Length: 635
Image (cartoon, rainbow, N blue to C red; front, side):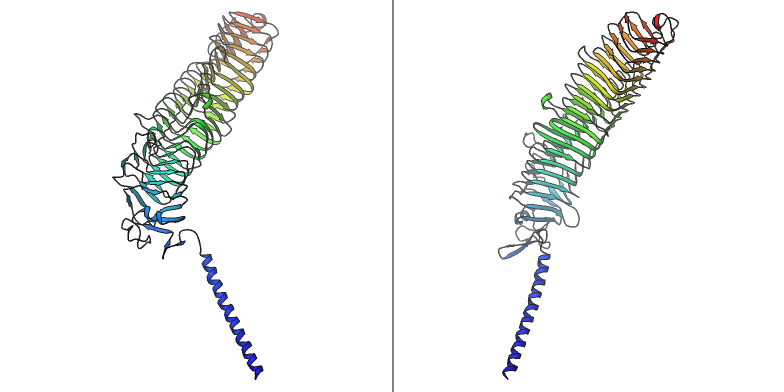
């Protein structure tokens, strides 16, 4: 009997244990599922008092901040109420268009909030009475993301930007539109930014549109100091600045990785610089990077139709396109770089796959204008089809520096001087690669025009098929006596044509140490006048043609030419001096070769050399020229 009772108790104990294990397993499964579904996002629930509120809060024009609880069936009336209910992170969903007549202060610190639409895309609209404040203000280390929502200023005149962000982060994501804001403030602190103003904040635009907004500075968006702007994908269009920065104005580090900035303007009556984008900081160094995207069809009244860099900006353009922009004023149809002095000037590098094309300016620098600053052009850069009065491709002045290590400058057209490049007023150009092809000038310098104390050094590159209607179809060097032009390396100046020589030197000093000047038509190879000096110690001047005198070199008083090396050969002149012609000038030859040149002006025209000025030769080989008259093929 006792044995049976023991067995029954043991059996019961096993059943209890098994049941306990089953209950435990069921509990683990339930808890596991709960944890699996636990996410701190739109479905996360938080406790407040005796009620449970979701971190999803709904807002509707038919809702109530008094009787609503933020659910989809009983929404709030205002964004402000929904925001106040969010503890740390949450989403505010619009169920209809919302009219805002009082600024929505998203200023409780360290919240991360998304505002979006449920179903259709709805609008946050500026009310007609909201004229002295913004629609949304973010502050105190918060993060606001806008997705699939329209913030519409409804063309209501206001004295403050529509969205204001301080010491926080702003994300403008896919489906977001910021539009129709008018900031007509005249106060320095509030007249910046029509659609968006940020200060000490990071802004990321990825899929948003900013359009048809107006402000004094930064019609679309103004990003103030101590923050950053990153544009990954966007459309910034039809915004207007009555002063500067029609589309975008940034004084912080800026990245443009994709999207389009188009049809933005500065006012035709009062506007100044930067129709498309203005990056400006004259006190703190900042950076600008463009790796993709399109800046196009923007227009400025004064300068920088597409992009304007001012002050202590270090920039890199390595992808994308700046095209069809216009400045109706002085400088930079595509890009302007400027500063108040050379010590606070921008530094810009162009490389890889950047294209600057089809930009127009009334006066100077159709593609790029540098007024103080340094620009470096590397392989992969294309500057083409730009137009201006002077310096259609690139123009530099006031101690500006141009370093060209590669790329192509082609098909630019100047109605004045400098089809490809114009450099003046103590600026400097160094060319160590790249090509100048088929640029045109209606005046001087089809390829390059150098003047007013500027200097040019070429160690590698091609200057070919350029045209001028006056002088210097390839290069016109028109400077004072202290300026220097040096060609020393793998350099080709060829097939340039028009009213003057391949290289025209009018003042200053030209050193040819190594390189080739060939097949230039109409004006011959090199022409010296207005006191220019030419020292030739190497290189080749060959197969050039002059419709007048001096097929290879033309020297006009009071200029002078000294040759210690190199070769002048196979050049042709119609009147005098197939190889060299001197008109009352000084020619001194102590080395090198003058060979196989031709003059078609008769038996005494000087096939190799014709001189009517001071002429000295000792050590230079002169042979094979036609006509071979007088001593050593010289007349």
